[in-house]
Image 1 (cartoon, rainbow, N blue to C red):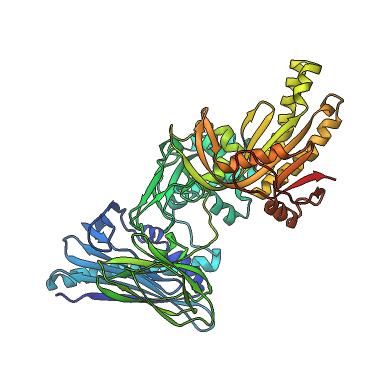
Image 2: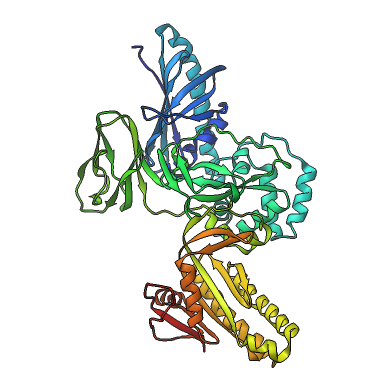
Length: 595
């Protein structure tokens, strides 16, 4: 067997290891910056850890290879191995190691490995590898300089052509639909941003970078779609690796299940976990090179702290995270076990991929975890069980009033039912309205009902809720946050008290509200997104238990709202268990009335 050529470069950087890790583990960006060609990836099944076949051009020569999962340890090193399908090399490896220097700074070691098919090809491959290594070294230095000056890597240059007239037209229309400064930021991103930045826009990540409210940026992005600046797509996100396994342009094209090629996992689609709204520059205003240039790299899975390929019939040592917390050991195919890391726990443990599961593993920080794989080659990873998500999930997007107003045609396909693990449902109803029709006449009573809708929906939208439907003089609304629903309800009670006081006629009616949060299902009904399930039933039944001028919520939600100061201007009654028709479970509830 021909010996592997191993070449490396060492760069001492001023930046700390965290900043360099974030920048240099974005391998799609790194490959673009160093002049690599685009890669076409197709799924690969069968034996072995590789799940994709890549096709590209390397050194001017067409190349095809099996792409193995990246191996890495957070803030320490990463490495990828590619088994070539013909050509002068049988295997290529690439990796970067990070070593904090005494005092400050980081030593970055870039390493390339090439295994020639024939020994006589070694000089040619070495020369080609030296060119790649030089470009990688230059990029590491550029990133380090940019981190020192800008605090982040310099953006890559825009490659695609733009239509200035179309952008100017979209910019003018967007400026009247949202905050002008935010509109200018979005327009600048589309006009001047790199293909990476303009090709996949995550509004919540933008909000974090810009220091703005999440929902404000999301609403602006939706407006940008309406004016032709951005395109919207729905990505199907794997519940394990959290990477998009596919995308569709409309909700109507969603199925009820998804599949992740990398994790070898099928999963049920849930609107709050598995479907994310992302945006890209509209093709009519700008060309974007969407790539891909790489589909691996630690930056794609920031919640994963360690990942290793497990050779067939082997025992591989992994390290427990150094930071205490709740993690999970996941093996391709779905087998997993919880991993709790705490000081003072054992420094060593052994597990087998064949019997993975059961009680949580409990280990000390940095403990040795030996993983025995009696089957074929696959990969394993240690991932955080909880992390701050920057995904604008379909649950949050579809609960926005701006989405329901401007994207009313975005519905699920007929017969499709998708689960959402938690939303808050709001029901309100007028008391005394039926008698009012006979007392003041249909026209006047109808006008009062319509005016009351303006009062209710104004507060609902102000607190980031959205109208689902009206039923007579009743309102059904949805919120992604239960406490937002309570805050809106309290303000509805206050606004309605002022509404009643404005005339004798309005004073003859009052409002009552019920709020409840939990799992439910989303369907298309009467051409719009609707919700059904026991959570909906309980919210409606709680509203029926409310008296005039009251809000009824479950005790736990009432306690959370009180703790956040949302009920400071209200009286909260003693808990009781109401009889809720058609609801088998007992619900402890409280009445809330303004003082």
